[in-house]
Image (cartoon, rainbow, N blue to C red; front, side, top):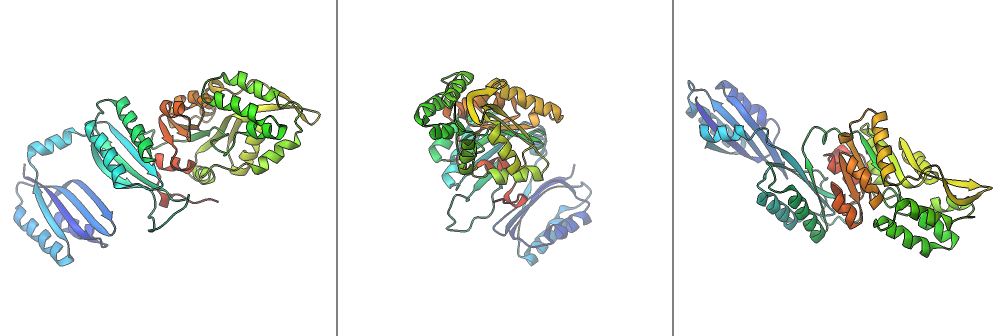
Length: 406
């Protein structure tokens, strides 16, 4: 059988260390069973799990490693591994894995403590911890500050529903976001991202803005809020609100569009999605007039929304064709995926209202963005602490792999 050893090297990082050490190991015909390396603030920890053949002596090998480490200014540690422990380690292969992503403007020790406590209480083990956000200068302030840590965990949760609830509670308490995803091939191979428009891609509910221009803002806003909370049927509430806009000049649409602001991170997210070959779509209960303008601005591939009826330069208070409500959103998402030959597990859907829930449920990943409580509870993931570009972290991208956009 020979010997199994865990060799751990630590010290200030320098180029060529792996080459030197593996050169020594190769002289003794050593098999490398596992290897891992981490560097934190220029301090390296490098580990080899090695098998020394039965016909080879370990003492000269260990002596050579110790001497080389000393010359280079590193510490070397050797830990024997029994056949039983090695067999246990091998048997863990293939166990389910999940990715836990912690997002916020800042991430403190207590945040990680609370998350890791829940992970441990659910019988899971943290294998790898990775920082996805860039290096943050001391004293950095402002809305563009982002922090993200990704944890790869192994094992079967005792109660997946309770695990998610615990993460939601911590997120609410600490003002952060915590995402939990199964680590599978689809998680690393998303291809389509579909967005709701109002209060998701843009910082406004367009119908409320139009109502303000028509002088019926308060009345329409109350109906909108009730509909977004799921208290009213969406098609009925939309018809009710639109009827109050009858006679509004079409020029008002441009006036409203000019003052609409994109949501934080929207431009950065979509530009990077396009760069990596993703298809993008707007599927909205809002209006195509605004969706088409955003499509031209951002380069979105598909737009589906409600078509305002316009006669003699004024709104009639009606829409042309079927209303895009919750079920219709899910249907359109399915149609886009089929047209692009994309599995639904490779789809991300993002929204904030109750009428987005069917679309979020259908997608491989549903993201509730700055959403109402009922939507946060019904979606796979929730983002409230960061802008829309926080989604880049959920698909595993590091800041250094992405480009900023204005």
